[in-house]
Amino acid sequence: MKKIIAVLLAALMLTASAALAETALEEIQARGTLTIAMEGAWQPWTYHDESGALTGFDVEVGALIAEGLGVTPDYKETAWDGILAGVDSGRFDIACNGVGYTEKRAESYNFSTPYVYTEMVLVVRTDNEEIKSLDDLKGKKTANSPNSTYAMRSEAVGAEVVYVDTLGETMEMLQQGRVEATLNAKDSVDAYLAEHPEAQIKVVLSVAGEPVAIPMQKGERTETLVEEINRILEEARQNGKLAELSNKYFGRDLTKEE
Image 1 (cartoon, rainbow, N blue to C red):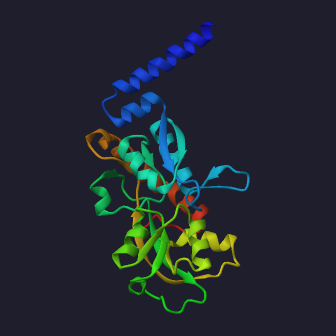
Image 2 (image 1 turned 120 degrees about the vertical axis):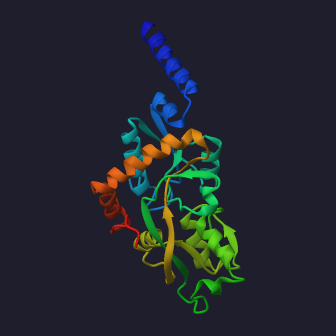
Image 3 (image 1 turned 120 degrees about the horizontal axis):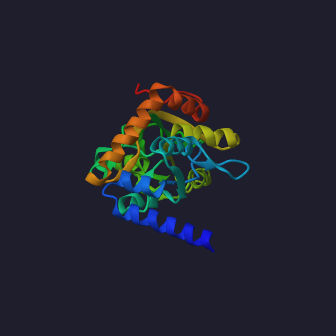
């Protein structure tokens, strides 16, 4: 009984410390956990391996950040369209899910420095000879997660975006002819093709994507958290850990801006 009371008192003290914290960093360190939002269904960023374990580049980046803060990572899997909303509301401390930095997003969130730089590819069915450039998407149907940078790019050139939750759904719709194209991360498309060599799709264009960074709630409360995460990421860049993780999951070093 005494042990139970001691555990309950310790939990209450942690809760009280977190509630009294003035900054997000103080709250996280008082709580002892870093709440990290991710999809868990976007290989090689965040996904489940054959054993069902959550893995991926951003799973390890999240663990690296949590370790640098002296806390435990607490991964929260959610659909893409709920990730940024959850960060905004304070439900999640950060998101690690290949989130592209844009000036528009920076109006609503505090971001870390970029930690990888991606390529974006235009994908069509193998029998499509009409779509070869971004301009060719005007008036065409594409598939993407809502509020993703890929959806925004597609809409910007006049495409009609059909919203989906996962890359698997995107590729299924494309091969069924329900959409005519998709813009997506090159490395995710490469991973899909490695697992589905029979897929009737092809890449017709590759262009620079947005730099990937860690979003946090907007405001002064997360400023020290941003500084600490930037410190951790820079240390991982300098000691080669980021490049090592990039090579492990992407087969190449994406940590340098070309």
